[in-house]
Length: 163
Image 1 (cartoon, helix red, strand yellow):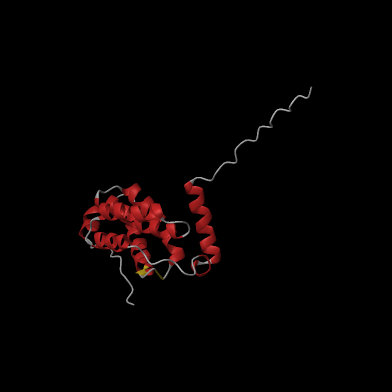
Image 2 (cartoon, rainbow, N blue to C red):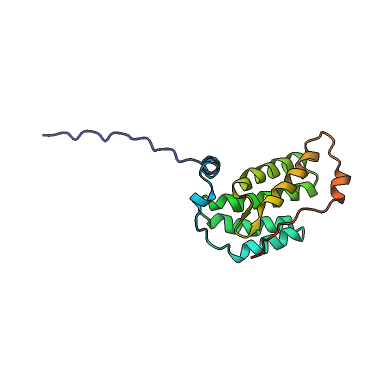
Protein backbone atom coordinates (compact mmCIF):
# COMPACT_ATOMS: atom_id res chain seq x y z
CA UNK A 1 0.00 0.00 0.00
CA UNK A 2 1.36 3.39 -1.00
CA UNK A 3 0.74 6.45 1.03
CA UNK A 4 0.26 9.66 -0.83
CA UNK A 5 2.61 12.34 0.26
CA UNK A 6 0.88 15.35 1.70
CA UNK A 7 0.59 18.31 -0.63
CA UNK A 8 3.17 20.90 0.13
CA UNK A 9 1.66 24.12 1.32
CA UNK A 10 2.58 26.97 -0.92
CA UNK A 11 1.79 30.33 0.63
CA UNK A 12 0.05 32.66 -1.77
CA UNK A 13 2.25 35.18 -3.50
CA UNK A 14 1.20 38.58 -2.15
CA UNK A 15 -0.25 40.84 -4.78
CA UNK A 16 0.89 44.45 -4.67
CA UNK A 17 -1.76 46.85 -3.44
CA UNK A 18 -2.90 49.76 -5.57
CA UNK A 19 -0.60 52.24 -3.82
CA UNK A 20 2.41 50.01 -4.56
CA UNK A 21 1.32 49.59 -8.19
CA UNK A 22 0.90 53.36 -8.53
CA UNK A 23 4.43 53.94 -7.24
CA UNK A 24 5.90 51.24 -9.47
CA UNK A 25 4.20 52.63 -12.56
CA UNK A 26 5.18 56.21 -11.69
CA UNK A 27 8.81 55.10 -11.43
CA UNK A 28 8.58 53.41 -14.81
CA UNK A 29 6.94 56.47 -16.38
CA UNK A 30 9.68 58.71 -15.03
CA UNK A 31 12.42 56.34 -16.20
CA UNK A 32 11.01 55.29 -19.57
CA UNK A 33 8.62 58.12 -20.49
CA UNK A 34 5.12 58.17 -21.86
CA UNK A 35 6.36 57.87 -25.45
CA UNK A 36 7.69 54.42 -24.67
CA UNK A 37 5.00 53.17 -22.28
CA UNK A 38 2.03 54.83 -23.99
CA UNK A 39 3.11 55.22 -27.62
CA UNK A 40 -0.46 55.29 -28.92
CA UNK A 41 -2.84 56.11 -26.06
CA UNK A 42 -6.56 55.79 -26.74
CA UNK A 43 -8.61 58.92 -27.20
CA UNK A 44 -10.11 60.04 -23.91
CA UNK A 45 -13.75 59.12 -23.37
CA UNK A 46 -16.31 61.92 -23.40
CA UNK A 47 -16.57 61.71 -19.60
CA UNK A 48 -13.07 63.21 -19.41
CA UNK A 49 -14.26 66.34 -21.20
CA UNK A 50 -17.32 66.44 -18.96
CA UNK A 51 -15.03 66.26 -15.91
CA UNK A 52 -12.82 69.04 -17.27
CA UNK A 53 -15.88 71.21 -17.82
CA UNK A 54 -17.06 70.50 -14.27
CA UNK A 55 -13.64 71.41 -12.90
CA UNK A 56 -13.55 74.66 -14.85
CA UNK A 57 -16.99 75.60 -13.48
CA UNK A 58 -15.74 74.98 -9.93
CA UNK A 59 -17.77 71.79 -9.48
CA UNK A 60 -14.76 69.98 -8.05
CA UNK A 61 -16.66 67.19 -6.34
CA UNK A 62 -18.64 66.41 -9.50
CA UNK A 63 -15.42 66.49 -11.54
CA UNK A 64 -13.90 63.97 -9.14
CA UNK A 65 -16.92 61.66 -9.42
CA UNK A 66 -17.00 61.89 -13.22
CA UNK A 67 -13.28 61.25 -13.71
CA UNK A 68 -13.36 58.41 -11.20
CA UNK A 69 -15.70 56.52 -13.55
CA UNK A 70 -13.04 56.71 -16.26
CA UNK A 71 -10.17 55.97 -13.87
CA UNK A 72 -11.77 52.74 -12.59
CA UNK A 73 -11.92 51.26 -16.09
CA UNK A 74 -8.50 52.43 -17.28
CA UNK A 75 -5.38 50.22 -17.18
CA UNK A 76 -1.93 51.29 -16.01
CA UNK A 77 -0.08 53.49 -16.73
CA UNK A 78 -2.80 55.67 -18.28
CA UNK A 79 -4.76 55.26 -15.04
CA UNK A 80 -2.22 57.55 -13.32
CA UNK A 81 -3.01 60.47 -15.64
CA UNK A 82 -6.68 60.37 -14.74
CA UNK A 83 -5.78 59.86 -11.09
CA UNK A 84 -3.71 63.05 -11.20
CA UNK A 85 -6.64 65.01 -12.60
CA UNK A 86 -8.90 63.57 -9.90
CA UNK A 87 -6.41 64.59 -7.21
CA UNK A 88 -6.40 68.19 -8.52
CA UNK A 89 -10.19 68.30 -8.26
CA UNK A 90 -10.23 66.79 -4.77
CA UNK A 91 -7.46 69.12 -3.68
CA UNK A 92 -9.43 72.19 -4.70
CA UNK A 93 -12.54 70.80 -3.03
CA UNK A 94 -10.49 70.73 0.17
CA UNK A 95 -9.14 74.24 -0.47
CA UNK A 96 -12.74 75.44 -0.67
CA UNK A 97 -13.48 73.78 2.66
CA UNK A 98 -10.30 75.20 4.25
CA UNK A 99 -8.87 71.75 4.96
CA UNK A 100 -5.18 72.59 4.86
CA UNK A 101 -3.62 69.15 5.32
CA UNK A 102 -6.02 67.39 2.95
CA UNK A 103 -5.62 70.08 0.29
CA UNK A 104 -1.82 69.88 0.52
CA UNK A 105 -1.87 66.09 0.42
CA UNK A 106 -4.18 65.87 -2.58
CA UNK A 107 -2.48 68.61 -4.58
CA UNK A 108 0.98 67.18 -3.88
CA UNK A 109 -0.21 63.77 -5.10
CA UNK A 110 -1.73 65.44 -8.17
CA UNK A 111 1.59 66.97 -9.15
CA UNK A 112 3.43 63.66 -8.63
CA UNK A 113 0.95 61.82 -10.84
CA UNK A 114 0.78 64.46 -13.57
CA UNK A 115 4.48 65.34 -13.96
CA UNK A 116 5.28 62.29 -16.15
CA UNK A 117 2.62 63.53 -18.60
CA UNK A 118 4.10 67.02 -19.15
CA UNK A 119 3.71 69.18 -21.16
CA UNK A 120 0.56 68.04 -23.00
CA UNK A 121 -1.13 64.68 -22.80
CA UNK A 122 -4.37 63.48 -24.43
CA UNK A 123 -5.04 67.06 -25.45
CA UNK A 124 -4.82 68.41 -21.89
CA UNK A 125 -2.27 71.15 -21.20
CA UNK A 126 -0.67 69.51 -18.18
CA UNK A 127 2.28 71.90 -17.73
CA UNK A 128 0.26 75.03 -16.89
CA UNK A 129 -2.03 73.02 -14.61
CA UNK A 130 0.92 71.60 -12.65
CA UNK A 131 2.51 75.07 -12.46
CA UNK A 132 -0.70 76.56 -11.03
CA UNK A 133 -1.12 73.73 -8.54
CA UNK A 134 2.46 74.30 -7.36
CA UNK A 135 1.66 78.00 -6.91
CA UNK A 136 -1.31 77.10 -4.73
CA UNK A 137 0.78 74.73 -2.62
CA UNK A 138 3.06 77.54 -1.37
CA UNK A 139 0.47 79.37 0.76
CA UNK A 140 -0.93 76.05 1.98
CA UNK A 141 2.44 75.18 3.55
CA UNK A 142 2.42 78.04 6.07
CA UNK A 143 0.97 77.48 9.56
CA UNK A 144 -1.62 80.25 9.25
CA UNK A 145 -3.07 79.76 5.80
CA UNK A 146 -4.37 83.06 4.40
CA UNK A 147 -7.80 81.59 3.61
CA UNK A 148 -9.44 84.96 2.88
CA UNK A 149 -6.78 85.71 0.27
CA UNK A 150 -7.01 82.24 -1.25
CA UNK A 151 -10.80 82.39 -1.37
CA UNK A 152 -10.56 85.56 -3.46
CA UNK A 153 -8.30 83.96 -6.08
CA UNK A 154 -9.59 82.36 -9.25
CA UNK A 155 -9.06 78.62 -9.29
CA UNK A 156 -6.90 77.08 -12.01
CA UNK A 157 -8.45 75.82 -15.21
CA UNK A 158 -7.86 72.57 -17.01
CA UNK A 159 -7.08 73.71 -20.53
CA UNK A 160 -7.20 71.73 -23.72
CA UNK A 161 -4.50 72.10 -26.35
CA UNK A 162 -5.74 73.30 -29.68
CA UNK A 163 -5.49 70.70 -32.39
